[in-house]
Length: 293
Image (cartoon, rainbow, N blue to C red; front, side, top):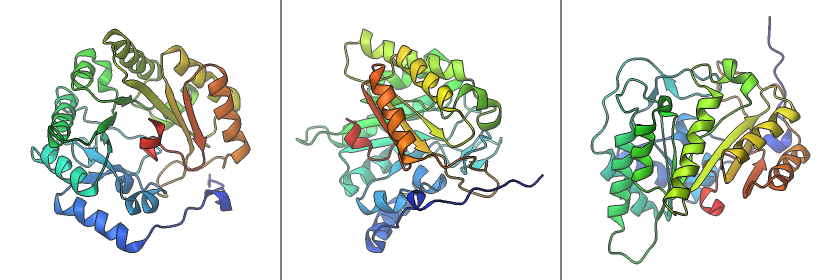
């Protein structure tokens, strides 16, 4: 049966950034053979972010071993070699771009013994070394997969000392079979709980963060329950954004959520005690991430 595709409303259209700035950022990335989720996931904010300039680095290759229906990142089951020069190249690019807040994410690598946790730690170490002895401060945020729920791998990344640890729930539990068929809602909540507990036990200011998309067929009550679950898990920052279909093969948009509803989600999340809630059409996990600090 044919899908009735929703018409993109005016408020869900984003302008491109300045061409010269865009090309400069892309050149810095290409010169070092670096991937970004901005490009791989076809983020609508890429023009604005590359113009600033800023970018969210996508590590562990460009091919994901999972097949989430919302994502346009390349998918495959075969092993992809890890670029051992990637940590140093990311550190160099961050310096050249003048980044004060660096966001790292990755494809999911279920084919690796540690899910790529060790590589996350190496990239964080290289970033910290790049500013060692300097006066400028650098904050680091990671957006990780669930590492199949293996605590040892999660602890590897936590122990490397990121300032913000993000793991997205992505959607409401009732849509997991369609949106994230190889993930598990409760397992992802346990990841967030462990992150929050680690920060508390270590006496650190590290924040647990998560995010979801809306417009995939969820109800308002389901979104509110996710916010309650995140609060109970110790999550301190939540992002809520509109799902925008990146390719014709991706899941269709069921609804373009009105701006007023995003405002309601933000107000509700804060009313139940979540420290920071950022909700809006173009809100993404790493969009304006430095402001969330």
